[in-house]
Amino acid sequence: MTQAANNYPTNIAKSTTPDESQTLKKNPQRRVVHKCHLTRSEIYETLYPDKLTGKLSICGPSDSFMSFSSDGKINLVTGKKSKERGPASGELSVTSYGMKVRSEERAAFEFSTGEADEGEALNIMCYGDVTEDAKGSQRTIKAKKIMIHATEELHLIAGTQVFIQAGNIGGGTITMNASNVEKVTNNDKEIIFGQRQTFGVKEDTTTAFDPRSNVSIVSPGHINHKVLGDVKQYVGGCVQTVIAGLPLSVPLIKDRTASYSLKTTALGYRVVSAGLGTITATGPMTLAGSTFTGTFGAAQLTTAAANVTTAALTMQPASMVVTSPGNITLTGAIIYLN
Image (cartoon, rainbow, N blue to C red; front, top):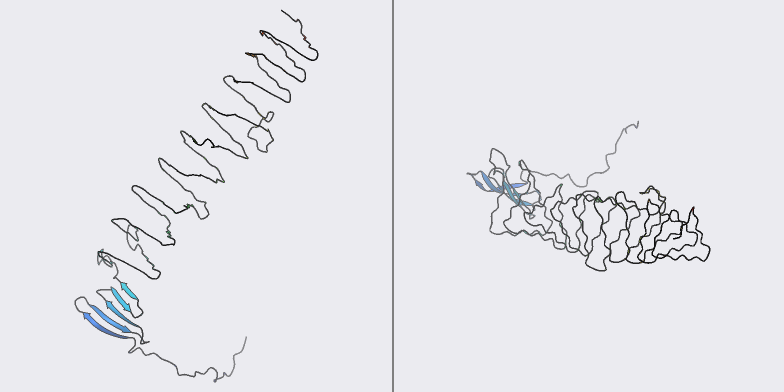
C-alpha cells in the first residue's frame, strides 16, 4: 500500500484571477408587461445573465404557454389533456382559408396516440386531391404494416423501374388475390431457384401470333407429364425425337433396358404414314404379337444385310418377287406350292 505524503506543496496551480461568482438576485431579470386578472394570464419578458439572450413569454390561461426568444426560436405549448377538462382539452386548433408553410431547414413532426382508444397518432382528412412531390429526392415510408386502401383504382406509375421485395434479402412472401390478372409487356423473365407450382387451373393456353415464335423447355433434370384425359398434337412441320438413353444417378424411369418404350394398356397402337414409312435398327429388331398383319397397297420391299428368319408365316399377295444374290432356302415339314 502506498503511504500518503506528510507535507503537500502550497504554491502549485495558484489562480491568477479571483474566483468568479454569479448573483441571481437580479439576473435573470423578469419583468411583467401585462397581467390579466380574469384569466390569470400574464405577458412578461426575461433577460438572462449574459445580457444578450432574452425572451418574451405569454403564460396562460391555465398551463398553456407561448414564448419568443431572441435567437428567433418560438415555442408554443398547449395545456395538458385530462378527463376533468373535457375531450377538447390540450387541443391545438387552426382554421384558415389558405395555408402556406415553408421551412428552409429540416423539419420534424412527431405524433403520439396518447390515451386514444383507436390507436391513431395522426389522421389527415382531405376533401380533394393530395399531391406529394419530392423534387429530385426520395420519399420513404416506414411502418410495421402499411395499407393503401383504394375504393376504385390503384395506380403505380414509375419512371423506368418498379422494384418490389419481401423481406430484407428477399426471403419473404408476396401474395396477390384478384379475379383477373393482366400483364402487357414486351419481355417477361422469371428467375426461380426453388419450386414453381400451379393449382386449380381450368385451362392453360399459350397463343403466339409471330411466325418466328419459339417455345423451348431446357431442363438438366426430368420432365414428367400425367394426363387423365386425351392428348392431341397437330404439327405443321416435322417432329424429331433424339433419345440418348444415358445412365442417370437418380432416374425417373427405373427400367433402363430400352432407350425408348411405348406401352398401351387398353386399346391398340396405330401409325399411319402418308409417304414412305421406315423403321431402321442397327441391331436386332423383334416384332412380337399373337397375330401380325401387314397390308400394303403397293409392293413390299424387305432388305437385309444378313439372314431373314420368319416362323409360322402366311402370305397371300397378288404377286410376289423374291430376289437374292445368294441362296434361298425354304425349310418346313411340308412346303405347299400352289
